[in-house]
Image (cartoon, rainbow over all chains, first blue to last red; front, side, top):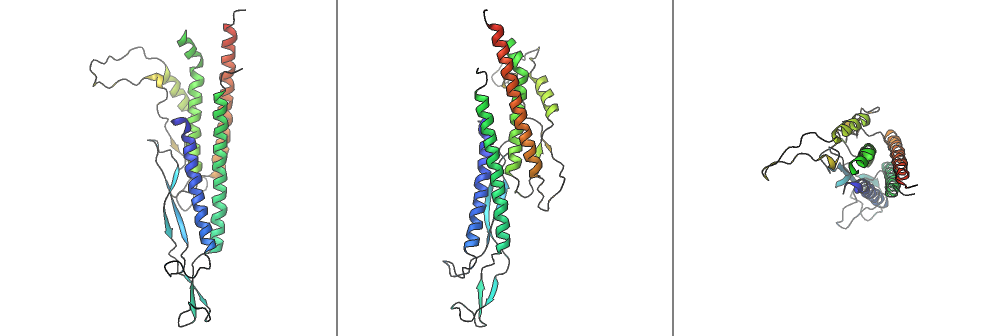
Length: 135
Length: 137
């Protein structure tokens, strides 16, 4: 129903932004994980946003099409005592950039707030419309 | 009688549904504030409103359908044709091709919400005056 499509649009943005937050949280948590379940060091991940086309005018929400791995080279850290160090004494560390992750987190939370505000305003307008003609 | 009522409230109804349509477009802009290559949209409200009002006037001639395979004429009671959406001119273009300016979108959203409410107030007062005109004493 068209009346509720604002909610659908904002809800899609909310879930997309929270997925972005999830990915950021995972990146920050694994900033020092030298080995994952596959034995490889953790690679930073990024979400890819794409607009979803809902009607013929092209007005619609957003969704996360995929989560890609950051292709930047891994960080090498000199630590000969580490059990995973190579022959030269270097350990392959994740390519997580904490500054990027913090910026991403702040941007995601701001966008999330803006969409919550859109939802609240729309809800108030709808409730007011429901009381049309009363009193 | 009923068509008179429709005439009394028709304009406000058109304005309200157009405001709602615009609210949706602005919500979509805000939702896609981080989507690469998304272009912000908006509508020319006064132009769309005058077109919607023009369209809602009853037609003098009705087309007759003699076969069920005839395409039925657009029934004007179902209201708005899809509004024509324009693209915003970005003030500060970004590298990823996104033209959503969050500040202006939110300002427009708030503005549109207030105007929606003022339309509601006007409809309410219109209904109230019609009701008082119908009172027996």
